Length: 258
Ligand code: PEP
Image (cartoon, rainbow, N blue to C red; front, side):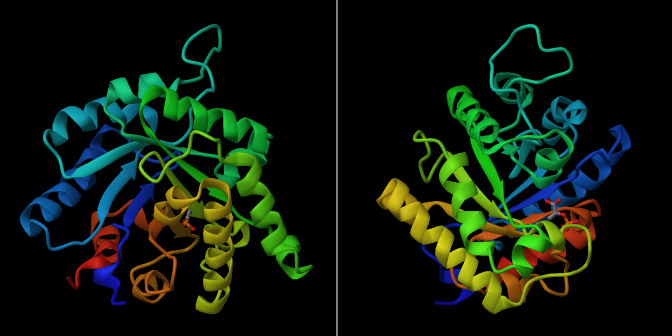
């Protein structure tokens, strides 16, 4: 099946991490304008996850945008005494239609467990936005041959029973590939995505067949087409290369051959 004829509509999402000020709106507008001008030429949904401080302003400026917005994290609860935290409901209120949960940087920097990630994904569903649940092995886990067992366990313990194809996206992001310029081979990506797909089907039945499974980790304009052509890869989660509209659009162009 050609990259443009997939049954699942792909998603290309940019994770800006802790980068971006109000002036970065120019990059978001450039992406929006390219998508608007291309009117249906890209067979993918396109999303950016700027810092939470920018979501409201971006939503107002983007207007009736073909460019979707996401948060990078949320608290499991809807409100309360949690200084500094942001609820999924707040992200939705600001204009986000999704939230990334369980990114490896949050798992590592904030000690987030699978149970925490699951509670955050449930919060996204409660708020009525999509959860983008990240899983991925460390270098040590890969070299010791534990990739599939680690990723399967993360998936089983992080994806809540409320997950459907419409409200949940899985992002496979090998920790050793994030921000390093290194990527797994297409065959390695294929075997992990096949395992994720099998897990999703056994957990969620037909919903698991339709859930998007993104690849993330050093996706760049020059490797995007190759990675996105792998079976069961339904788009990309892009970090560094999503910060500049030109690079990000070049990645989105992997889905431009409809
Ligand atoms: C990420 O952090 O989600 C990511 C994929 O980063 P990068 O593309 O920079 O490797």
